[in-house]
Image (cartoon, rainbow, N blue to C red; front, top):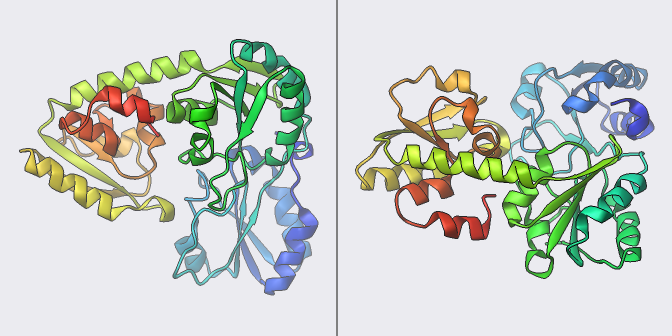
Length: 335
């Protein structure tokens, strides 16, 4: 995606560098903005600082490079594409967030999505931080089509209507008042999560591709894989409990609790800490029959077939232990 599609806020970046009197700056970029690395490095150096671009994947605001920044001796971290999610309590290096707001017109894609929403009259709107300022435009289009629109807002820091890959609380806040959702943005990652979290029909208006489509087939495919994964895990005796080492994905308390629950039910369980939870890394531990993931829940949900052994969320582990039913889990949403 080219720079013309997003506001990189070059001038504001340079002001922020001068404000912090930063001499060395580390930049984290999501995949879609990595092509702008050279442009951003040039702008940072014009502001009088040395630029270091992180080449690692950046999965979200949970994936902050605090320790790496300290090791590199930088004075400032610039984090692109996400809003603040956590406040590191022991971070020496300040973090500046730049949202990379989209500059593309969403109206053509939203107008195409109207016919997909024909069966319903009450529509919830959701998007990422890049498009939250454009939700009012979407509202007007849907209201012109005789739809009632609702934008969820829990009041906990995120902008109204904003969802994250792991957090759909804004959308769920209006779930009992809407019949379906319209997600505005690119890709299937967020709308799939939205539908799995709310268990409501979800249409997508993608302004980058100027297309509209429903996510229902993806949802059904995911649910079938999750259920098959869960049934296989019920046979497992030896579990690995995955602890994420990314700053916003570490939940040692949850990992310890599910380990205890498994052991009380006659299972073996071992705590396993990883920075990157991938099929390749888990293949190094052949003694485990299945895993419970306490890091980002999307790791297991999105690509279960990529893993050779079942990888469950905590909620799915409770189903496997008979503490709750699959049907009840679906009522509350997988995320």
